[in-house]
Length: 129
Picture 1 (tube, rainbow, N blue to C red):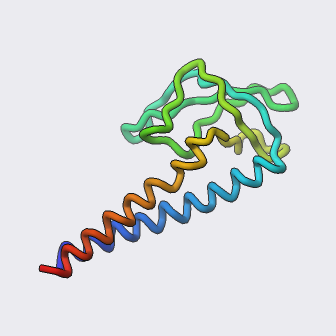
Picture 2 (spheres, rainbow, N blue to C red):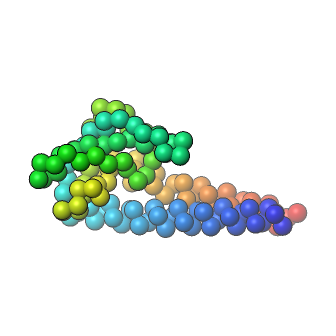
Picture 3 (cartoon, one colour):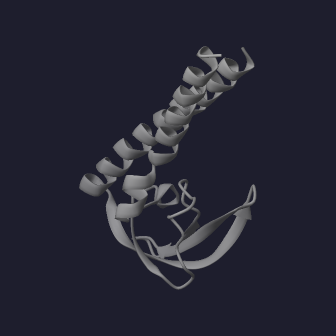
């Protein structure tokens, strides 16, 4: 019984991650078409919840210095200090910038898929006991 509950927890986490990934994917797609495009530079990394996140700096259209931390981070998405990355943001909202690298687009939903598969495997294993 506990195995099935654990599997359901994994499936619930997977669904939450997949909803986030779909929402983020739609936003990035809109930004690719209609957003303000530019280049950002990774200036440093900060640690949030034991995970390193890059801080990306760029100058917006108005000449303001903007820094942001990408919402998506994890294994395979590391950006090195000094690296130039393509960014885009909604017109008038540079603080809502997103990184437009292919890795960020592809790997956004991978975590959700991994949790979903793990949850299904755990549920199936628990139902056989």
